[in-house]
Image (cartoon, rainbow, N blue to C red):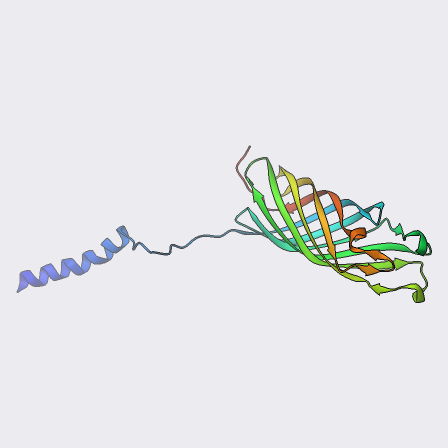
Length: 200
């Protein structure tokens, strides 16, 4: 009886140790995700109607596992363009609010590629025009995919340059149509965040 008791005691003592040495293997293993906030400040060169203009841009959001960005972008034109000849008593201004989604290829490389897409709502305004001459809806929808080349210049900042194309929908404002707003855009920006990647 004493022998059985001794064996039982040894088994109970050994079980916790075995559990520590050989952890259970699970069908669905835990995956550690990294989340990091970012801030983007940029300058856009684009067109409204047929004339060139500049937009200021600011964006913020979160980077997931160094590759996926989810955020919000706001941009506003600050070089306003005269309306078509039939409406020469006013100037166009445009603001955009967008959901920003982005996938980064090879983020640990010093120079890498990012594929952004923005989906949102634009707002057209007119400066210097009589209120009774404004026609149509000032709001429109847009989708704007692009390709950016980025360079890690510091562990807290990277610089990017690239281009995107704005496809506008439902534009009907003071003689402007969707084709007047749908244009290519060149972009240069600085992105601030925590980019603690291996040395290059």
